[in-house]
Structures are given as structure tokens and as C-alpha cells.
Image (cartoon, rainbow, N blue to C red; front, side, top):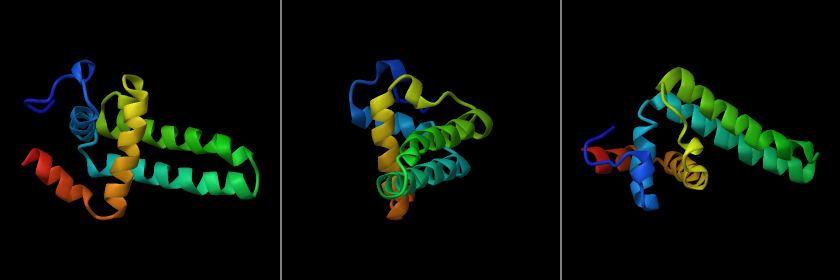
Length: 113
């Protein structure tokens, strides 16, 4: 836990959660697994809408499976989803789009340096 960041059960706003969320994704490989999982969500949603509805079920299963793998075996922490499912989903998409647009490293520096 970073100094000045409340424990996850004391977070009151999404902005506080966002900072906590990034501390829980401190390793690049964890963030890479999340990026892959979220990318597959968009692919599976498109396939579910155009090819077969079964892809709609595989979207969250695949995304959470890859993300949780990265937490348990790479990051060594508990997924934030367990305590804050909606904020966690929102933060995952925010992290995905920051990564996609090349702004995540800048955000990490802004918050932690």
C-alpha cells in the first residue's frame, strides 16, 4: 500500500479507488494480462452480436480469468473486483483506454512521483 492511500474498505470516491486500483496493478505484466483480457471482451462482444451469442458468455469469463490469473500468480494480491466490482470494472476500462492511447505511464508518473 502506498502512503496516503486509504485501505480499499475506506475508499469513498472513484478517484480514490483509481489510485488504489493502480497500486494493485503495479507490474507491467499484470497490466498486460488485463489489457489482453479487456481486448478480448470487445472482440467477443462483436462476435456475440454478429456470429453467435455464446461469445457473450465467454467475454467476462475470459477477461476475469486472465485478470485474476495476473493477480494471483504475478502481482500476488487479491483482485479489487472482490471488494468493489463496479468501480473495478470502470477502472479496468479506464486503464485499458489509457494504455491504448499511450497515457498510462504518464498517469502513473502523475500519481506516484
